Length: 261
Ligand code: BTN
Image (cartoon, rainbow, N blue to C red):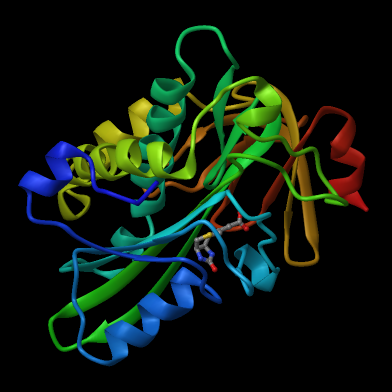
C-alpha cells in the first residue's frame, strides 16, 4: 500500500514524499531545509536504517512501523516553538485512538512527548530546528510502533499489533496527517498553546501521581502537579516545594528507582 495524505491535509495543500527506505526522515528533512525547503512537507517511510531518537539515542524501528517527519516554518520565538511538541503529542494520541477504536487500548501522553498504550511506549516524537531567513524551520519527527516494538529497550514498549490492533503504517499516517493539521491549526504559532495545554493535561499519564524526573545529572522526585504556561513540568516535592523542569525524562511507579539511579 502506498502512503497518502488524509483528505483534510490534501485539501490544505500539504505535500508528501514517501520512501521505501531511508536513513532518517528527520535527517532528510533537515537536509532539505538547508537546501531551501520550507514546508509544509511530510516525509514518510516504513523503514529507517539510522532512525534518531531524543537525547541522541537511536530510534530502532522494525520494518513496517511508521517513521514520518513534517517540515513547518514557524514565525515564533524558540521558547514558543518548543511548545509545538504538545500539539504533536495530541495529534499522535488522537490518531492512535481513532485507529484503535473504542476500548482496544488505553492511550496516554507522557511528558514531554511520548505516547503510551497501556502504560508502555508506543510512539515518540523528536523535534529538531534550523534557523532560516523566513523563520524557524521545525522538523517534527514521529515514530509509531505499528507492527512491532523493538527488542531490548530499557523501558516497557508495545506496538499496535501487540495491542491487537490491525492497521498499517499507511493507515496511521493518513490519520496522522489530518490530526496534525487540526492540532497545529489550534496551536496557531503558539497563540493557542493554553488550549493545547488543557487538552494535553486531560490525556496526561501520571497526573497527581508520584514520579521521578531525571534532568542531566539531577533527579527530582515528587508529585506531577501540572504543566506551567510554557509547557514545563511542575513537580511538588514531599516538603511542598514546587520545582519546574524544562527538559528531562520521566519515570513512574517501579521505574522511579531507575530514574533515580
Ligand atoms: C524518541 O526518542 O522517543 C523520539 C523518536 C522519534 C523517532 C522518529 S521516526 C521519524 C523521525 N525520524 C527519525 O530519525 N526520528 C524521528
